[in-house]
Structure formats: structure tokens, C-alpha cells
Image 1 (cartoon, helix red, strand yellow):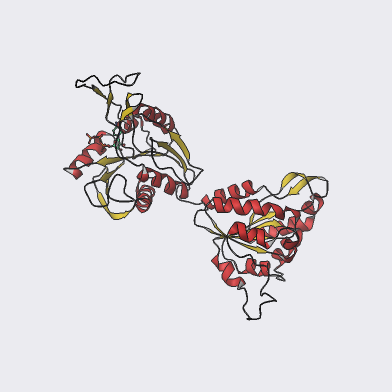
Image 2: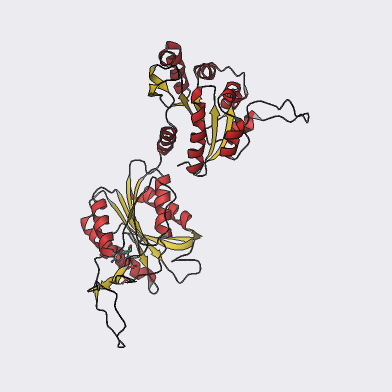
Length: 401
Ligand code: CTP
């Protein structure tokens, strides 16, 4: 969820500030661009150099550098408007109180007051301070402004006391923000099953029948579905590219039969299933248990048909489930795709014509036509697979949910 997002981390003066080094790393690992601002007191707990190195951006804490005679100043408004989201962590009782009252006596507060993006705050303080009516009132007030409260955890505090007031762990902060950003997304609460990549059908322990599918289209669908709020399961054939997003549940399979079993299991819970895998239609009847040796003579491998995963799911499909197939056609493309759509009981079929330049296996781009049950056709021009994935999912949201 944080990939490509501009995150402003505001650190205030609490011992929990040391955890912001880990938080910065986690945000960067999640794909965010991070800039850090400090309150003056935060510098007693964590150095600007550490956070600048980890965030790969200069760290700021004052409106201008007293040593710099050029007259240049740090623009708090620009920084506030730059951010897609701001996290104030740790948020001390002093900073909470100033945020709630509009006091603006340092650079960090100036940035906070200028930010128009969602603002998260993760308090850190001793247990009695955390439960003080003034703190509770400030937290409530900040929430009434639309700021998002990340509750403190319970445990040993810097004072030696035990109780509530520890700043939430960096992993929990990232998780909280990720989930919060998904709220209100078009696929929020939907379970999406996607299969992708080729299958390998064993001839013997070292050889197989396969195809050139890279899995890129299915992985793009999985990532886009996740960023639109869905809970995504991806059943992935061998050698396929992997999604970058770690919250996508990936199930690795090799053969068509393994892919079939996993898809049928996951389909029971799925709201939407998109079958983009290039499943091998046939497999060797008897895979040899030992490597086949050269005999000086021709050999014949008998192939038998694999299960048709999409057709099987079409037979299982409930009223509320949406089933989307792909069709790879080299001739009579539209007629063949429509026939597949009906035969396999799909709600939508994505017609792929690999003969078109920049389309199909291995490419980063694709040109497809969406066809629905009423046989309406929606041609999508040549675009990146990620953009095509977005359009397919948007079509599902607009027409099929
Ligand atoms: N498919 C499947 N199981 C198979 C074969 C195909 O689930 N054993 C799915 C593909 O993932 C795709 C759709 O069926 O979503 C159409 O695949 P395609 O290869 O275009 O067609 P086939 O049904 O295999 O028919 P043909 O190869 O004869 O065109």
C-alpha cells in the first residue's frame, strides 16, 4: 500500500524515537519515499545523520540553518503539501497538546499544520501521562480533526513502570497505516483469486513440457487488486515473476493438476477469480521415475488431457462469484473467445492476441479486448500490463460487482 507513497515522518522527543530508525527502514522497504522532520527535543534521542542516511533524504528540524548565510529557509508548507501521508511517531504528550490546540512553535508543528494528507499519530509516554484526562482529551480532539490515532502498546516503560504508553511497534505502525489506506477502496473486503504463469508437466525427473508464459500479467493483476483493497491469493506457476507486495498470499505450484487443486480450494472463499495462467492442456501419461536415457531410437510420449481449471470453476461458480478467464487466440479471435466465455461459464473474458506487436508472453505491455456475457466488446489499446490490469479490475468493479 505504501509503494510510491510520499511519507513524512515527524519524530518528537521521547526515548521511543530510537525506534524510528527501524520505522524508517520498514517504510522504505514497503516502497515509500520518506522524509523526516524532527522536533527540537527529538535530536536528544536520535541523530539527524542516522535518519538522513536511512531515509536517503535530508532531515529538517528548523526553518533555517543558522550557519547558512545565504538566507535560504526550509519551506514547511511545501513539505506538508508534498506528503501523501504524515506519521507523527513517537508523539509526546507535549506535541499532542500543541497539535490539538494549534500551537505552532517549531518546524514540525508548522509542517503538521500545513499538511492536507492523512495524519497518523502514535503516542509514547508514561502510563499516567497516557491516561491523564488532558491527554485523552487531546487524542479525542485530534481524531475529531480527522487525524488517525495509532494506540500505544502495553509493557515496560522507560520509567521502569509497567503499563500502557509504549509507542506501537514499527511493524504495527506500518501495518496499521497499510490497512487504513485500504479503507474505502473499490475492492475493500473482497477476496480475489488469481492464477498466473505456466505449468510444467513432467516427462521425467529432469524434463518437462512447458510454455513461455512469464506470469507478468497475473502478477500485475494481483498487485493492482491488492492496491484496490482486495485480499489477494496468487497461485503461481514455476519460473514466474514474483509480486513485490508481500501481503499477497502466493502459492507456488508446478503442474496443472497442482494448480487445479489449489485454485479449487481457494475458489470456495473467493469473490472474484481471474484465471490468467497458461495452463498446459496436456501432460505425459506416465512420467518416467528415472531420467530417460538415449536408446538410439525415436521415442513417443503419450499425452493425456489436463483438467480445465477455468471450466471446472465455472461449474462450481455461485451467483455472487465473478469468474474471469483469458483467451489466447491466433485466429478467429473474437468468435473463439466468445465461445470460450460461454463454454467455461465466465462473466468476462480477456482476449489476448499474441501476434500483435508488444502483446503476450514475456512483454511488459499488452493489448487486449474484454468481452462480457452479452458479447459486448471493450478493446483496450496497447498499455503496460499494470495499466491493463487496472482497467480489467476497474471493469469488474463497474460492471460485475
Ligand atoms: N485454462 C484452464 N485450464 C486449462 C486450459 C486453460 O484453466 N487446462 C484457462 C486459461 O487459464 C484461460 C482460459 O482457460 O483463462 C483459456 O485458455 P486458452 O489457452 O486460451 O484456451 P484453452 O481452453 O486451452 O483452449 P485452446 O488451447 O484449444 O484454445
